[in-house]
Figure 1 (spheres, rainbow, N blue to C red):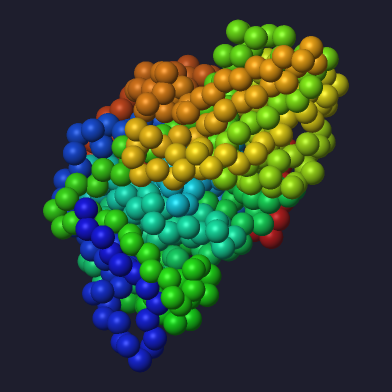
Figure 2: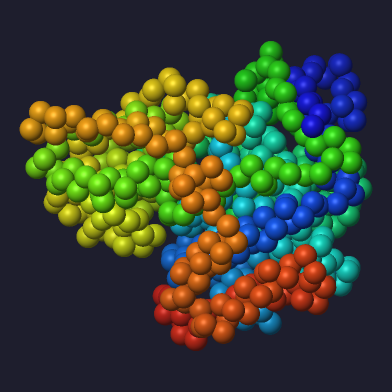
Length: 510
């Protein structure tokens, strides 16, 4: 890996484009290096994973709304158009709207892959815009191999930016790394020159910087839309750049740019790791998916709660418990824990989006039920159950410096996203335990493998897809590296008859 040292430059310093971070990212995207087999294998896993969580959310409000918006737009004249999850593949829309609709469906349940470092990310959000453009550009000869390469680039860039540049520290939403990564991935997919990708990256970043209020307090449905918006903006940025339009430059390093005014300020220096020329893009192998539908920092806690449900069922009864203290990392405490000071995290009437960012709620339900389901665990009646509310309000979090250090460790063998638990019982005894990583983590008790991704798809898609459609999609997805241009339109799924019709229609401007 090479390290790019990035700082603010005055306008009169005339920082050459070739020394700007956006140009360096574009060079990585334009590098014709082949994808190594294990990366291609993982790309297929994540395509299946995305489709699984999209299928599970297909009848929910936000994906239904986004789908309606997308289908209100005709196919643009420059290509074959792109498919929308749930809809017959013969019904196409323009690629930016397909990226929008599919991106919302993927993100709705907060149930796909993650990478955590200086910044948080869900790098699977790169897949919808890359696939949408690939389907639209089939006439250009784009193949499954190109899709694999584009997705590998998207993961690489978003993860490398997340390793080095914290956005949340300045209350900037993490999708500000997704806009550039998706633009870079599309650039790789289409084989665009460095100059064009450079301009697209600058535009994508400029249009996708927003505050983190979308993930604070009473969390709204925009949380599902934010990454889809970044993907849509990336598609549009690539289109403009291909037409010769330019972007704010230097977008990161300018004296009125992102670093100077949105991040650490004019005196800051960031050290961004990127693959050297000719070096394979491997970052996807450092990411990890979710076994449970909740914020990633909750995954290990859910697994600990499931274990405690079996081994210590007495602590699921609030009558036996004085207090439950979760000692954990800074992020877990302040973002999804009691350190956020959000009363909504203890409110039984809170939205699903809020509850999946409340570790006190999630831990309580998993402890009492011995499982955590993407639907039933968030049901309003489940949240309002008296014994749950009583125990839930006894659960608090605190930052532990050691767990914070491990959270930020650059050593994958040491990095941890869990913590230690201390339960004080009403009989005066104290119970302690801990967990470092989720069971499905690469270093967990049962790391996810291909059969787990397939199982996740079968489970989540089962209620909304016919059995034959499940098998057809799994066949196409697993053949992704070998798909020809004509087959890319089959990289979607069609809902069973009546499923989409069961969703109340909404109308808007379009």
